[in-house]
Image (cartoon, rainbow, N blue to C red; front, side, top):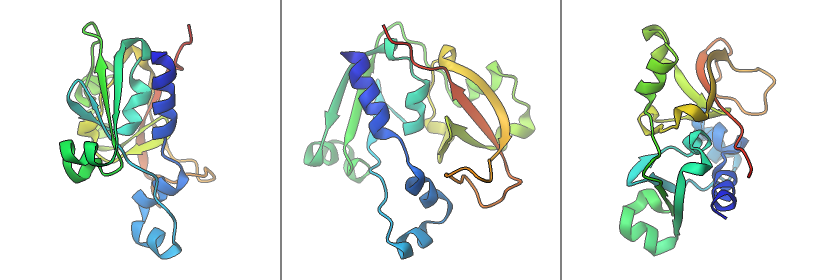
Length: 172
């Protein structure tokens, strides 16, 4: 049941092309009349995390999930939870790592630690909100975006990104 709930949250929190386009040029998005995707506020054990980080959290480490909507969410977290809030309680045995831990674990050179971070093809605006189970990371690599990809991380085709690729979630 927890895996199902976690999978649904992960799927529901996925940013699509329109939301990624907002990161690149939000004024053009407004001109074109595109609708942005909901951005719920997400916490694990009381710590805010970025949506793409959910792909780096092992479902086995989740104890419970609580979803707050409307006034319940904004009353507790303010305007940042206007699209709702997802509160995740992890098992006490779960070990979480920050972006600094990922840099150290994967021996990312200091020069590359300034690159924008992408998790599972989703750009992360604030890398301080990345939380991960290190064993859930398949690889970390420096990449340029695919110029024919449906989602653009940047308008600069030569810009490099640090791409974190999660392992697939196992089903039991």
